Image (cartoon, rainbow, N blue to C red; front, side, top):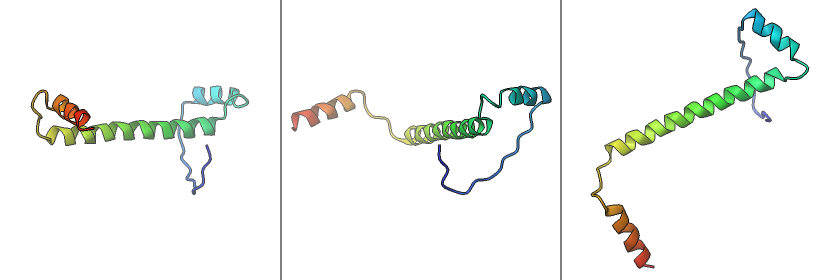
Length: 81
């Protein structure tokens, strides 16, 4: 992951035991990279959830189509070609 824009510092407090375990793995795990990737992943996850909610609200307000109308439209489209 390459960051081309300015970066900001985020500070996180963890229990002492967690910090000790993190320190014991610092030669194996790139903690800043892992934490950055996790944050980006969570943001993307919540954005997807929010986008689904927006679409659901739009669909909720749309009028219902009579049963079979989609099949009819697809059939008409196929026959027209």
